[in-house]
Image 1 (spheres, rainbow, N blue to C red):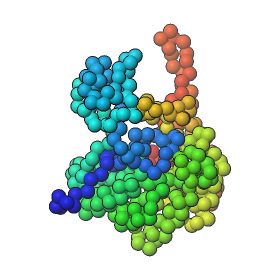
Image 2: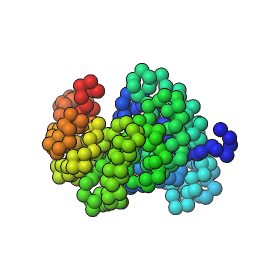
Image 3: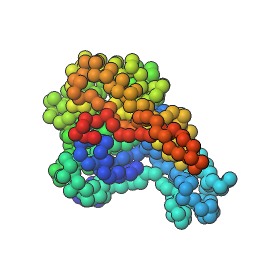
Image 4: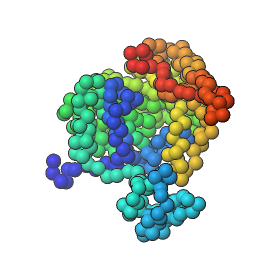
Length: 348
């Protein structure tokens, strides 16, 4: 590959040993930048395409070397906290280099296809033994279609299973670049009502639904991707309603989409720290985990919507029951605890 043909991408992180983004053990490549702005987003650091500075309070020793080093005076130290003025911070990374404890971290880095390929190939043995592979996610990976297509092409040349995780809001040309090298398409349908979809995500859903129909036909004609998984995040006071799940199911059934899997993904409330690190407020901060009964109820509605029952399941962490523990004063105290469930027995 000559220098002029090198394609750069904006990488957020590489997550190894994942079992949530496709079959088997997977390495998930998270890219930066998204076409939606979901109010419940569990990866807020992935929304902006630009590099972002985050502060990890637990690592900070209050030395203030970062404050002194910042060329734009965008950092200050107030009440034992690093305050970042994001209106003037240029994410230059100088403060990150000066920080002795890793309390400041830059989210988003330029990387070449070759660099990602070499990193992922280290995990090939795990893929071969588990039937896994790589998943390109985001953000929205189609925003970097050229980078993703070239990377996934290299994966196929190395006999590695590939999956594309997309929110569906992308131009057809972007999918046409990537899909020839894609084995599995992970496609989100979040909310069937277009007005509610716009309220929750910043965009209506017409293009997303139309894209899914187009991509379904593409799969029939071209034979790739070989499999389709539809995923719906179950968010309290948002997407997690009987009306929404029934409506999505009816859309799937009416259009003969026949997904290999329709997955209801339980709300996760563990991302609040991510918002705090970015100096943001999370709309869903007050919400706890859903119960297994709530997920089972919505799953049953999905199974009665006309979609193949055998291909519908729910996944994620849920609140299951109360467990009694003893406090330091030996007083009984009920606490909630969680489990990962909803998968068929062979996948649990």
